[in-house]
Length: 118
Image: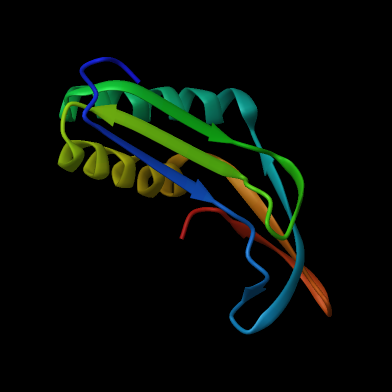
């Protein structure tokens, strides 16, 4: 946050307890870290080019996460709320499309690896 920040938008993604009607026990996230960090830096550069962002945070955990835990946090501060909302949505949507992060969903009756990208 800066003294000029009138709008701060924060996205916090949590591990939910079900996917497509199946009970989720936990998630496991894996990433190719050097490339993931590089892609996040690209996203940040795009954000600073497109919006008057003053501060930006992008964080994604890896490892085993239980229901209710937080794998992803994005925070954007701008002078005005509209820019903060737009930039924050861009970050999470782009992260899910381009950053090499993989998610394993562990259910009561099995597990499956899924790209974090749709």
